[in-house]
Image (cartoon, rainbow over all chains, first blue to last red; front, top):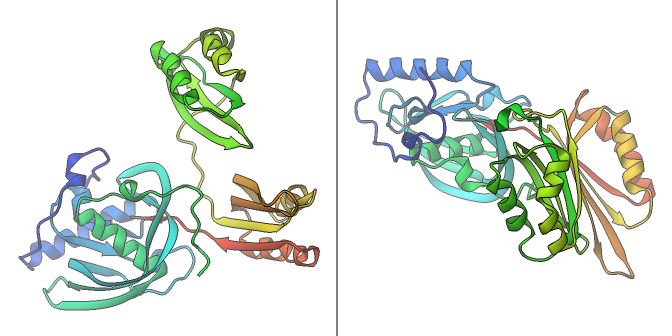
Length: 160
Length: 176
C-alpha cells in the first residue's frame, strides 16, 4: 500500500473507531505490517498513513536497533492512553515525512488500553522507546504529526 | 532557473539587532532565490547566519544584491560556491555532553579523543555559562559512531581525572 506523505490532508484527520473485527481487518493489518517493512527501519505505522481512516496502529519495539523493554509486536485497535508519567526528549522520524527527523517530548511511561484484532480488550504498560512509538502512532489516529510537537533541536531531558 | 545553479553558502555576522534575518531574506526572495538548509544563532552579542542559497546569481552578484542590507546592519558577509545538495541528512546515534569549569583546550582534547574512538560529529554547540569570575564550559555533541558506543565511553572515561564531566548517551531515532 502506498504511504501518504505530508502535506496530505488525510494525515491531519481524526480517525474513526474500529467497529468491525473481521477477517478483512486482520488482512488489512497484515498489509499494513508489510507496508511498514518496506520503509526505512520502521518500528510502527498507523492506518491513516495508508489512507484508511480508522483507529488502528502497529507498535513493535522489538525492531529497535538496541534492545529495549517491550511488549512484543502489537496491533492496537482503538488505543487510548489511560495514564502518563515523566517526560523524555527523543528524536523521531516518520514514514509520512521522509528525510526529516526532530526532537519531541513524550511521556516516559504510559498505560494504554486497546482492542486486539479479535475485539478483545487489552492493556499494556510501556516505557521509554516503546512508549514513544505508541504515542507517535496514537497521535496519527488523532491527525497529529511529530512536526506538531517539535521542540528545540537542542532540548535535552534525557538524563533520567 | 534556480535549480540549475549551484548552491552558495552565505555567512553573515554582525551585532545582534532585530531585523537582520527578515531584511536579508527579503532581498533574496525578491530576486527569486531559493533557500536550503540554514543555521542562525546568537554567539556572544553577535548574530551569525549560515545559509544555503541558490538562484540569486554568482557569489559576486549575491554580494552586490546584499550590499545595502550589509551596510545598514554593519554585517560581515562572505559568499562561497559549494558542492552541496539537499536531502543528505545523517542521523546521530550518540550524544556526548561535556561540562566543567572553563579552561582552554576542552574542545580540542575531547574532540580529538572522540575522533580517535570513531565518532563523526554531526552537530556541536558549546557555551560559556557561570559568571565572568567563575565561568563554566558546556558542550553538546551529536554524532555517529562507526564502532558503537563502547569505544566512546572508554575514550572519555579519562577526562574524569581532569575535572570534566562527560556523559555519553545512545540515541535512536524512532520512526513510525
